[in-house]
Image 1 (cartoon, rainbow, N blue to C red):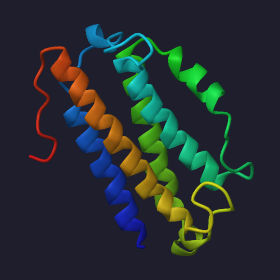
Image 2: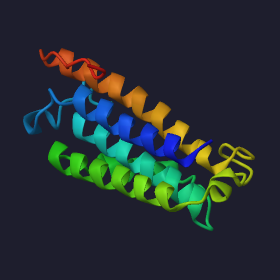
Image 3: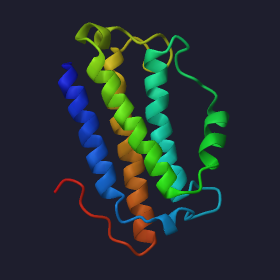
Image 4: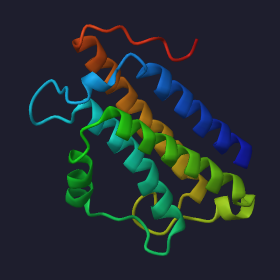
Length: 155
């Protein structure tokens, strides 16, 4: 796959996520439909964290960190939507910068066994997009539960 397709996919992912979640405000940070569910702020933080997780897993010598309880603990500490959005912005900006700097050969190398094992490294972009879409949908449901109407992301 061409590097520009990956970069454009990441840019569109961010645009759609930001627009879909734009009805949510800082005052909504702590909302969750049930106590055990992630709050608005934690959903955004989880989405940002997962971008970092994919990037670290693909490009560090350590591979994918499978300490999921540790990841969840980190996310559960986030209480501010503004803080989570800043994390999201940094994570996507970094992902774009890293992908732009990689050669087509780098992006075609296979991922190690395990998460997406054997697939080209660039495939993580589609994993990020798919994961983000899932949480974008959940957050639009949260917005509706708060009596808000999320805007259509594609117009």
